[in-house]
Image (cartoon, rainbow, N blue to C red; front, side, top):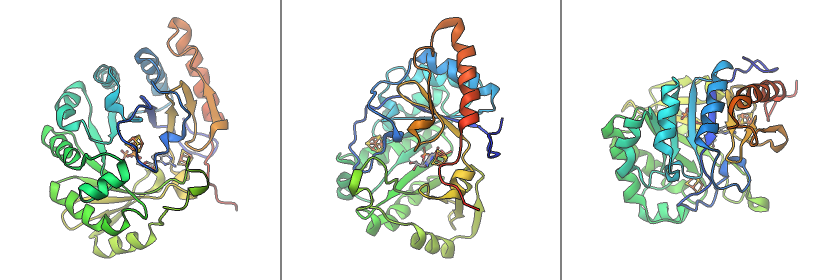
Length: 304
Ligand SMILES: Nc1nc2c(ncn2[C@@H]2O[C@H](COP(=O)(O)OP(=O)(O)OP(=O)(O)O)[C@@H](O)[C@H]2O)c(=O)[nH]1
Ligand code: SF4
Ligand code: SF4
């Protein structure tokens, strides 16, 4: 089903928890408030089932750090048996132990964040001495057959100087794709732009060394195919009307709201009280989806 701006809803992004074992200075917590533990397993299943009727086919699990959610394997199992492609975005700290079990549970693919090319740069951004553990996690994700394995690099003034080294390192690990991400100036108050970097310069370098350019329908993201075959996707989500024009997602927040846009607190529908309430849950969730599609709009728009 499409919204008033011709955009289908195909992807459900679920915040499983706000708990995290890292302290990245740019963390936007999916633009949500302070609820720590996400909605119940049954509530998630109910929302997912209804979302299928509206066209959702893929589910992204996020946080906080989703691997800290105790019933993660059960939730992945439920969602993949409903026929969804289930992927997860993680900081990778626990992946060296968990990748095999996640794959067995039904996870298709994984995005792992790696914001530095060495122990110190990694620690200065995440607040945790976890560089080699995350590298092990990435290697393990590849070896158990999660595919594609993508690595997220949020580019800021703190790591700009070693982004190219991080890209080379990631390429040498055999990763399928990199997301080069422009920092969201969200939730950082008046310091929001202190560390912000535009990606134009990096992108023009990629353009020169790539062997092919593609545009992904999701968020109209440009993708550059490197000589090794690895793809680098440039994610410029802020003040980018093209990005919003290709937005195909809806969110379930950790406190049980359907959220139509990352940036819009006023475009949410609170379904926390009915999410797992037996027979009334599904019809009520269905109405919430209808409302969500009716009020959904691109956050950044061209003014013609
Ligand atoms: N504005 C905005 N930014 C988003 C949205 N979804 C993802 N992003 C940005 O994209 C980055 C990468 O997100 P991921 O969760 O790793 O991946 P994904 O965007 O779901 O994409 P795939 O896994 O490639 O399908 C995030 O850190 C955000 O900066 C969205 O709906 N709106
Ligand atoms: S790992 Fe993700 S959720 Fe955790 S602090 Fe960093 S950006 Fe936030
Ligand atoms: S409409 Fe909102 S959620 Fe969608 S891409 Fe734009 S800012 Fe992100």
